[in-house]
Image (cartoon, rainbow, N blue to C red; front, side, top):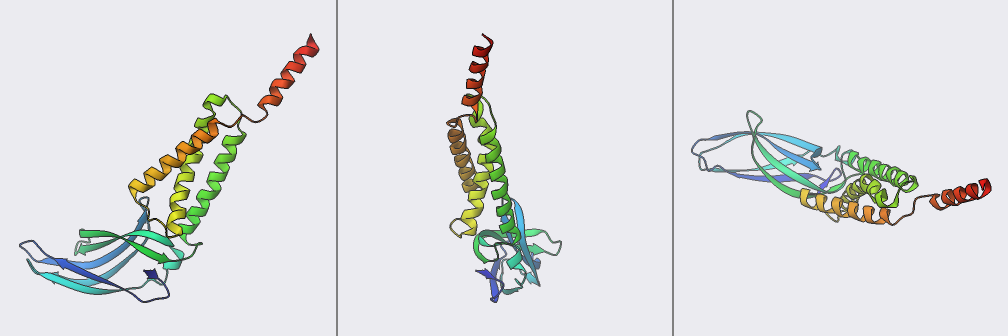
Length: 203
């Protein structure tokens, strides 16, 4: 649970299976969706884990700005970094982030909603042969799929992950193509009727 209004502590345990001591500089908590990092928090620990030894820390996280960064069910990664700031080991998980819909994450979802609406409108209103019409809904379907991923995450129903993101995006895109192929081109009937009347008048 990550909440700016509540104290958050992260308990970290490390077991060094190597034959030499491990110098640990910091612990990082990172939240990522679709390869984009929406928040990361570093805490210096500056300790040494002896060879074939263990160490445990309780890390106090300063989350005062997380409200403006993300909201919903977010995949997280806890990283242990050495003195060169290289990641020695990492573990993945999920976190309930109590942020704002107007956070960076929420605004990205709203942006996808607007883009999906524009692409759908362009696909529906564009004239063309019905056989190729469904393909014009591919961009809108892809954006709609990503929007579904963000919506499920924001509602804390499903955390994004590459397999589910791909499955949802492909599924929604396929549905959009099928639905689009069944739509008739706008004004197609009216144009055809006008052409017949013009021919009859010329005759």
